[in-house]
Image (cartoon, rainbow, N blue to C red):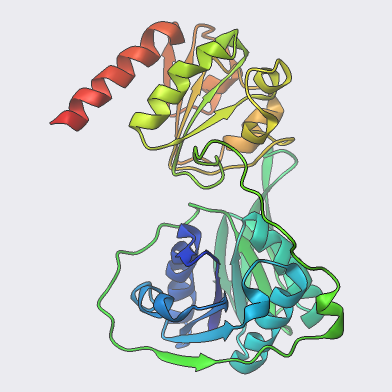
Length: 327
């Protein structure tokens, strides 16, 4: 069983989730005598092959074209479908990112593939694969077997699998794939890309997220959340209540109606844990909750719970971390 991994890159930087998928692909392919292959799309991609090879890919399909310089779903879909035609894999893996979700569904529709979105577990089951994914706001996990008589496409949550350490480059086969662009692919053109925000990491891209809730009381008080996130090299998140109160922009909202994230470490400061918020972060590897309410729902999912005043603990934690970094 050959497994093809979509390598998501932006401006020449590979998304960390792509390396995690290469690890999963190696587990699946290794049990069936298949091999791990990768497809990367964009413009001027030559410098990425070494990193992809060190991640575990044994063959790389490169679709390098000026039309792919900036992400547009229709040309990217055509590019990935061309790589699938060349590779003829049994399984294709995409990261559950904005690009991955957008692209996987288009590719599945065009190739008439079986599709599962936002999976946390993927395993072999006879001649096909079985996936698990959270459902109904994370209340339970559903298990599904994909139809084995067709291509199987899966998007996998970030950090559901760890990335293997880079290995020595033992040589990788690289195949250039031309872009068979359709007239319909040109219907949408990118005129301008405007950067937003202050350069602070987005919660969907960070391995560590520090979030604040309504207990912060003001936007000014969020400075202690930003200070802790900075020393941890993490991102700042917020609950819906905090965003609705105007303490933080809704682009930082974590939850079912905001952004669903699965960082390695999630620190919830002054967040009680409404159902929609828990659905957005309960997949985090380690959850630390800081709250004065000992019966707050957030403690039911927390790895570590601190029943105390966030205005006391968070600055102390920040200072201790600064001392540790200084040494």
